[in-house]
Amino acid sequence: MSQIAEHPPTGRRSHSARETEQLGAELAAGLHGGDVVLVSGELGAGKTTFVRGACRALGVTVPVTSPTFTIGQRYPSAGGTAVGHLDLYRVGSLRDEDPDLLADYVGPDTITFVEWPDAAEAEIGALGRIARRVQLSHAGDDQRLVHVANQGR
Ligand SMILES: Nc1ncnc2c1ncn2[C@@H]1O[C@H](COP(=O)(O)OP(=O)(O)OP(=O)(O)O)[C@@H](O)[C@H]1O
Ligand SMILES: [Mg+2]
Image (cartoon, rainbow, N blue to C red; front, side):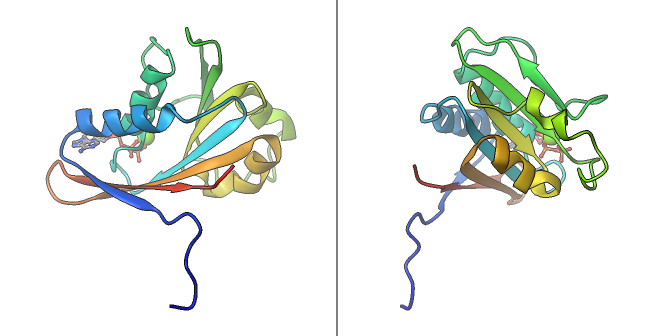
């Protein structure tokens, strides 16, 4: 074998939305302020569901849904660390946007989850530390595969 990944992705199979929420909660336990979690996957793969579970574990009690009229939301959290949630599905590129747009959602005192991160990965990485990459995929019926890559610390 020519190369061994330092942090190989670990795959888990989820059988229900509830299980995916639990995987999100598990991941949340290892996060700190300034951490960013990129959450990728096809339409309906369970990204928001995963983020919801993570947010609950971080003390967010308000509903966690994909933002509709803005690119993101900030949730008040009983846990102390603010939680940001971005969904960049409709954002083709941030080049034409206000550079401060992301600063409301990503920063040293915030833990941030980003759905459809491809449009702004570099900009997000400049504001926070990309700590995990989560990849969700459909695996038949209510099953999903969830891969988490740890970016190291
Ligand atoms: N194992 C599972 N894990 C996650 N969601 C599941 C699972 N089984 C069924 N579902 C359902 O699939 C849907 C996933 O929706 P969700 O909004 O989380 O996906 P998404 O990846 O965020 O979609 P979008 O691309 O529109 O942002 C929900 O209705 C959820 O209840
Ligand atoms: Mg979503």
